[in-house]
Image (cartoon, rainbow over all chains, first blue to last red; front, side, top):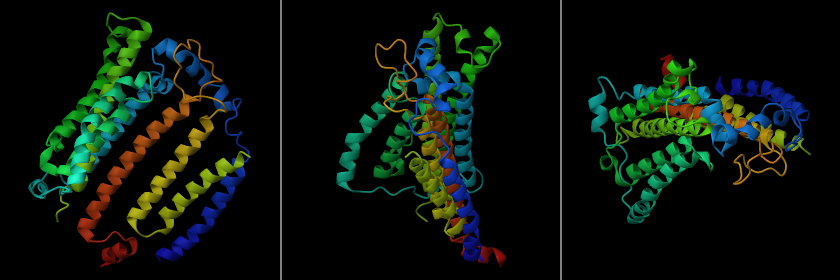
Length: 246
Length: 118
């Protein structure tokens, strides 16, 4: 049944492909500066982002300030994914004892890998913090820094085995991720008593004004995202590799 | 010829959909789903591109950025969200696959359907 259905499925697929190819010819030329996507909404963001939010990186300005609500939803999505992974793989509940007993990820045990990792990991930790804090002035931000830091923690576990970096286990990882999302929500709710609007950074009661205030507030939001992304990525790795010994 | 860029992206997308439909192994389906998501991401980035424009970070000393000189930042932002969603979906899908393998011992759709029938 499988392969006949698959062969039948090829037909509407080819039809959809023909439609896509045909429609692609009507789309504007790649790189055309006069295309609708470049002339209606985006010029305002490009021209006003640095002046209004204090961030030279327009992508960060849009992500963490103009469209912060969208980023909030995205952070909750990644937290939910981490939680779902933990639940599906039985980190809580009756099988928890089994999960802890299985040795997660045997160490690679090679000297070359060990030494290279020792050289890399401190720089990765430092670099991830740099990327988060410089999200305003260069490519970077909470998500990017979180991915780098998660990579560093996962590298430690791959090279040295599970026992070596107990910093983020299931419980503490979830707490860290939730704290990150909570920080984001807190930045949003904090402005409600002052101006009645959610996520209105301009109304926060700090002794700063205008663009500078929004810049610091987006940094706070990015740090929350950083914690959430790091913790969830390490959690997903942990839950997938626990029980690898069986 | 601009049509070639969009045609290649469409091709990637179709390969992804084909992989999900036609391959019986779950991990290959998952990889095809990833390919599909990457195709969509590249498509949006293509829309945002402008000729002779630099990445959307205001250059030092450029107090009045002109929209002609910078690439459109909105698709990039949208695609950051899409990448995060892709990672989340892949993570949960892998967790489900691990469970399926633990319970049934197989990751092949045909073998799995046989086992479920019994």
